[in-house]
Length: 266
Image (tube, rainbow, N blue to C red; front, top):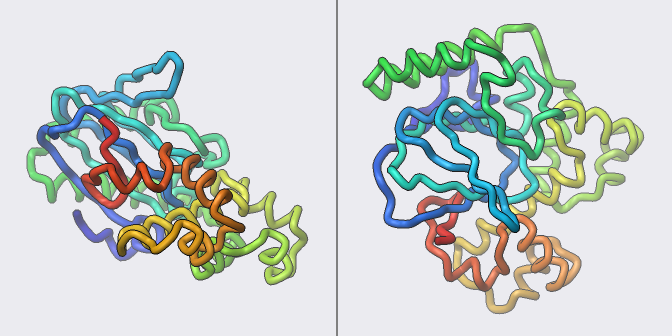
């Protein structure tokens, strides 16, 4: 991992690179209030869309994954060599010159979005064996494409900060009242800028807080955890957790985690 350049730190949460083989067949990336640039520098990997029937989409180049409201299953049967950039909720919208609203809940080849410059960057990365130099290339590319004068509405930055501070436990109407704008205006601006409406962002933030709570140990009861994390009741908690994790909370705790943002499902 590497800390981003000072000019990028408000927008990029981390750069990372990993390579090698894993002992499992499939992992599940859990949704967060983040979007990602993913550069495959090794053998083909697969994005697995749920069925029936399942669809396996080859990932062998340079992709962008927008804000998601559900988990993403992936496979790397021949191992992996993956460079990634994680953006804050407003980071991609601030830096990248394409619509986040059009890319929410989607993972797309970057060349289809911006053309041959994505392929050219990947080719340069392939011919750069040093990890630090690879990070430099991607960082300089982001600084270049991000210097467009584009900016995210201050209301969006303020709203995301409030949502994070509250752990997602807000109502859209409450957020609108605090902002001084109507609920309709607030929802429209945020949806247009980052791709998801405030309610969806609040739910994702609450799911993240729930994962952190689970990481600290098994709760006394699911009802207790539901109450602490701001769900209406245990049923609401389990249903929403299953939407984001693809499993019940009890099943989730039985799965191994390669990292805090994913679980092994096969």
